[in-house]
Length: 96
Image (tube, rainbow, N blue to C red):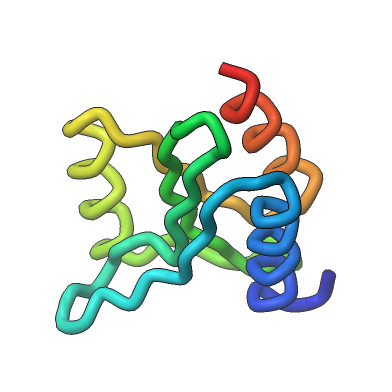
């Protein structure tokens, strides 16, 4: 995959093909919120912030803060720049 958008779209497709829920998040006036919300077919919730598969993507200060706040409240939040890594994480979550 060449772009962050390609990676994100592939992951959304995978989740939907496996009976899960996938939604691109649009947090108006709230910078730093993760890109997507995923819910496995078994009900496990995951937030994912996607970064370019080139390995050059970095989290902004707002993203670091928002991810920390979500995790403090018990949310599973992942930063993903690789399709295989997403597949492994999603498979693990789906089998919990």
